[in-house]
Each structure stands twice: as structure tokens, then as C-alpha cells.
Image 1 (cartoon, rainbow, N blue to C red):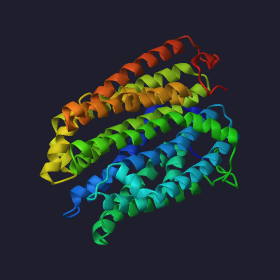
Image 2 (image 1 turned 120 degrees about the vertical axis):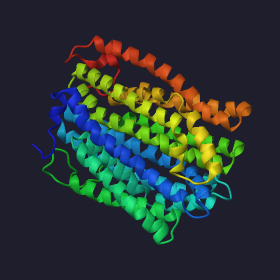
Image 3 (image 1 turned 90 degrees about the vertical axis):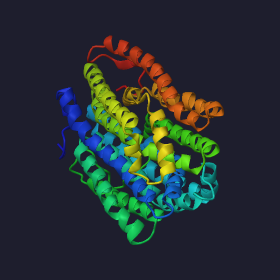
Image 4 (image 1 turned 180 degrees about the horizontal axis):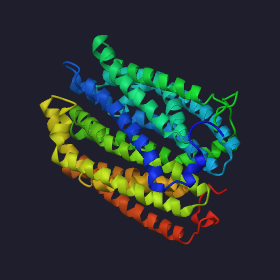
Length: 465
């Protein structure tokens, strides 16, 4: 057997023990990833004389960053999910083919995205809410980020596979490395070398490139049960189709985030101006911290649920879901308490501008007033994706952001002004949780009719062996 974790443990160890082993590294990694983004914002927000406009310029880039992440998850999460199920079926050769296919697809998609976006960068940024004051900062940042986009796609994709293949601690370690190295390089490039916002982007790309190099080296080891073949640029149409289908749910969720961020920036610019966009950037970073902790829980659940579904051990699938949903709800409650009780303290980390602080503090309170509901919705959506229930995953991924949030963002500011943007979030969260609960109750009802070892056809999954 290969070196590293033994994948069959996913089907035999106590579920709570497995979730701790897989989720804790994921939580640390995702928290670190969130801090990674926060560090950039904190340093950028304190650039002398231009910090407020610089952080607003950074916020304008969020839709592009979300779209890039969406394309990365389209390939990476789909491949990671397939690999975990194939390992559950002990089909190591097929898992290696999926890995090689993931490298090829991420390279192609990342290259196309870079070329297209760089070719029309200024018009895109203006469309996403940039003004004459913020465009130079947004352009400087995104130009460097886009030049390193292929490295980012490959790194995040391979990191997901490392985690799903039984080595969550290594995945966590690589993420921690990028965070720590970025925290060191940021002040050097931003202030020491006088590069400003370009320095933050340069530090980001360099750190992710170093992590990618190690990830590729890791998968070159032929002694591992999962490794890249000699010619690791390979393409299989069937594998690509299945991987993209599974990854479509999280892709659409991230793509929807891009569209929503676009609408948010446009409405904030219209009703509140550049500083309101900057305030949203700060709120986004703070909320993102708790979202990413729940993403870490999702990452811990994903290989356990996927493996046991592949092994037809449905009771373990249900157990890991319920436990993960409880933990995610607790995390969301903590985020709610901080947003409502200590918003001023949280916002002051990013800026000393009194006007920007006032706007961000009010927005944080309004946006996260029903935040305790978010954890359950995230975990449930991920479960459908883990089990290959693509249609349900897509419905839940899109409902909160497109079906509910976008109409609210466009209609409510007409009567409430900029406050209408902020209150759109709790309204859409509530509606999406209602829909999620309906679909989840139906799934649990079906799971109760299955005994371990039964054919999973009744569930409507695309991941049947």
C-alpha cells in the first residue's frame, strides 16, 4: 500500500473521530486562507493617504476573484469528489486518471480566463463598480493576480485532492505556509519596496506558486496510491464530463457570488458611493472568516461522506452529515455574536477612517442578523454535492444568491437606500434555509429506507458504482 493515510479507515473508524481528523485540518487551513485575504485587506487599508480608496478598489475585484474561484472549484471539487468515491471503491487506477485530468483542465481553463480577462480588464472593472478614484488600485492588483492565475487554479485544485485522498494535514500545512509567507512578504512588498497594492498581489502569487511546486512534487511519488502518471497532462472526455458535472454545483455557487458581488457593487456605488463599496469589502472579509470555517467543516465531511456513499454505508453518511451540521451552526452563531455585539472593534482592524468605519459597522450588523442559519444551509448543499446529487446541489447553490438575493438587492434600495442592500442578505438567507430544509427532509426520509449495502438508485445520485 502507498505511503500516507489508509483510505479504508474512512469506512471503519468512528465517524466523530474521522470528522475531527479531517475537519480540524480543513478548518485551520480555511481559517488561514481567510486570514490570508484579510491580511491583504488590512495592509492595503492602512496605505498612507489612499487606504480607503485602495480597500474600495480591492473590493471592486471581488467579482473577478469569485469567478476565478468558481472556475477552479468547477474542476477541483469535482475531481476531489470523484477521487474520494473511487478510493471507497478501491479503484486506484481510475483515481489516478482523474488526477491527471484535473491538472490538464485547470491549466486550460486558467489560461483562457487569464487571457480573456486581461484583454478587457478596465471595462470589466468599471462594470463591476470601479470609479476614477478606485480603478487604478483595482487594475494594479488584478493585473498581477491574473498573471499568476494558472498557479492559483492548480494549487487550489491539487490541495483539494490531497485532502480528499487521505492527507488533510498536508493540505492544511500548505495553506498555513501560504498564509505565513504572505504575511511576511506583504509588508516587505507593500511598504518596504513601495509597491503599494501591487505588492500585495505579488506576495500572493509568489506564495501560491511555491505551494504549487510542492504539491506537484508530492504527486510525482509513484509509491503513493494516488499519483500523477509520467505524462501528467492527460485528457479523458468521460472523466472531464463527470468531474465538471459534479463540480457544477459549487461552480454555480461561486459564479453566482460573482454576479451577486457585481450587483452589490453597482447598487452600493449608486446609493452610497465608493466608501460603501469599501465597507462591503471589510464586511465581506469579516464574514468570510466564519464562512471559511464552515467550508473547512465541509472539506472534512466530503471525503467521509463520499467514501462511505461509494462503499454503500449510508448510516455513516447520515451520521457525519448531522454532526457536521451541528458544528457549522455553532460556528455561525459565534459569527452572529461578533457581528451584533462587537462590530466596531472588528471593523477598526481594517481602517482608521471614521466615515468608512461608521458605514461598515452598520452594514455588518444588518447583513448578519440571521447568520446562525447559514451553517446548516452550507453543509446541506455540500452533502448533495458529495453524494453526486447534482441537480439538488445546483438548486440550493443558486437559490440563496440568484433566486432570492439579487431581486432583493435591486428592489429594496429603491425604498430603503443603501440599507436595502444590507438587509437583502438576511431575507435571502431565511428563504434559502426554508428551501434547503424541505429538500433535506426528503433526502433523510429516503436514507432511512436504505440499509447498508443497498443499491443507491432511489437517491437519484450520479455517483453509483
